[in-house]
Image (cartoon, rainbow, N blue to C red; front, side, top):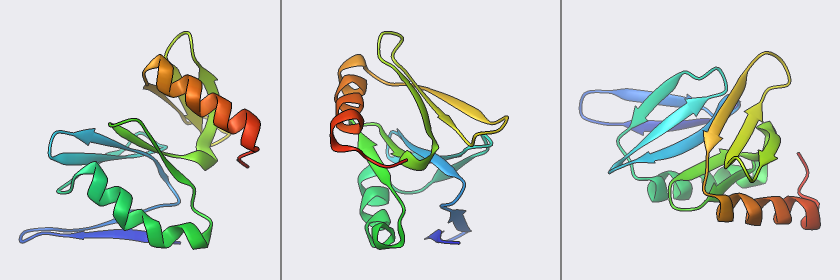
Amino acid sequence: MAKLKFNTRDEFLAIDLDYVAAFQADGSYTKAVYITQREYMLNATLSQVEEALVPFRDAGYKFLRLGRKIIINHKFLSRILVTQQVLILSNGGSQDLRIRIPKQVLRQYKEAVSQSGLQM
């Protein structure tokens, strides 16, 4: 169980990467969204979060940045609906998370998944 830790003057937050479906940019902050749709606001930019995730790649975590505003956890990928501009992340059970993403970004991601054989 890997945790991404954020410490501010008034708060300590440990984000469990096993349950994070996505990180979404929100101005100078980033929202961590669990597959259960629970959300935590982080006092970090999306670029800072992306950098903090680098050490976890060797442990098998596949977080991928899609465009300027989102990083997804590839293990939760369920469907890519290009024409509807929707990416569906799922835990295989009752938890689905629908995320709106620009068509061009989804098209590129779909091609990468199809051609490179990114494992889910």
